[in-house]
Image 1: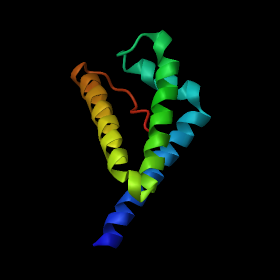
Image 2: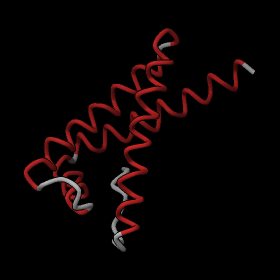
Image 3: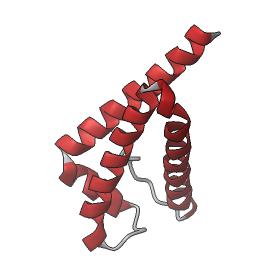
Length: 102
């Protein structure tokens, strides 16, 4: 059971780390994806893109270390909840946009 749990954390670390790396490598593309949701003013899209990418990278680091995994899970849960809320709002508005995940 311990191996399965550790594998789950490693998958989250890989997904969050990869997602953060892509967003940090292409910040303007991610900022444009954020603008497409029409939740934030345009002037906040770039700072939000950087903050989200850094939060994802931070979650990956927290989840990678056994003694910080609980904090990592809490922050990751908050991020996933925010992503779900943004995507749900876009769908409710009838928007057909990419998620901006990677």
